[in-house]
Image 1 (cartoon, rainbow, N blue to C red):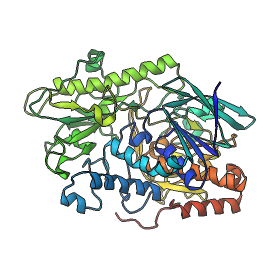
Image 2: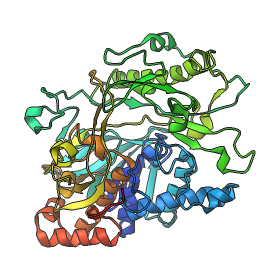
Image 3: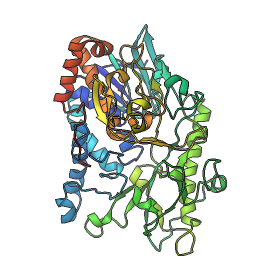
Image 4: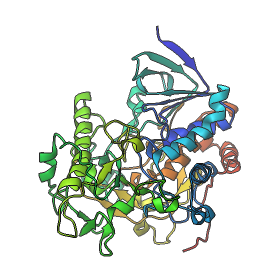
Length: 523
């Protein structure tokens, strides 16, 4: 017999948005059950092993208070537990990893430690029930409400039925939406449907952004750490997409905003972009000699983006096949770099590249979960379009102002090559707001999105999917569910009744969620 679990709010998925949603609901005094498919909470920050993608003002403003606490916590984690150099210790905006993709690059385990500390009081008190290695398998809905969600342990196979007044979908692919019978969208909408300048002429529901199995490596010159040849290496060694200027396994890529070919190098040479330094997550020069044998880099590059098929709304067999092929691509990239990659000195291969299985916590050395850029998305009361946020569509140079704002974000519209052969779509966007209407399904009353599955399009997903934005979405959803329980009301009533909206936004502001951008910002 399945055990039955009860809480005020159930968060299905413990990634970046799910974590923030659970923390918000807990802070608001509610009991929470949070499930997570892997054995690490944190999603993009941990199990997917992706250093934060952030905007240039992140150190001063443009994120929620708790996201800033997380960022501060990462720096404190290293300062408190590692032999950090005096220079690094004195730098308030220290970047432990030294990568240039972000102002705060770090190892996944550092992020995990900080997130676990942030949840510790609620776990110890029993206010939070955390079910790791559990995935949703069924949902029971009645009329327009979710009554229960059944989750299965990936360890034992046992099932638990979660009953709660509110359910938040924070799964990486929006897996709860079809189980609950909620209306949702996948892939690319048509230009006729959205009017977006960069939309396709015809809707392509299976045209979704590539996903990536990230991995970590360091480099020990003079040593040989070559892995066994991957099973599919022969295929990936020769693979070239029609829209790509060279073989995928090469030092040639494209500039996302112009699609012109660009040349990379592994290590800095003063001429080309250093891929090793791009997402470097540990810089040994910041620590006492001997702490790290080498810098460590996180490999999330164009060369291991997988676009040969989607893992959303396909059969279990097809999903498994694409996941395995994506793993083979990442392992093939490493093997190519170790054995055949051209070097500036005329030699081939860097056998000293070492796969750091310990950094991501897996036997195969690949992240516990693929980096998912695009999810199922709810059909929402309001959908954010390219016209609301793209620089070219806003002659006044300000994104659309939303009276129902529940947070802010900023990032380029950055779409990676997609599963039906479209290259990058990289469009300048303006600092934007997150409208409450994009968090409210068109029909369901007690089901809310809590990550990148909100009411955005294939295009605007490209700027609403990043770490601080996903955190803000989850946090706003967690507080919204708690607010509705307190007021005995529904999310759509909060949006559509001025007094409720005012009180909810006041609550968000008091909790440290910025609802609008400053009128002036440093250049």
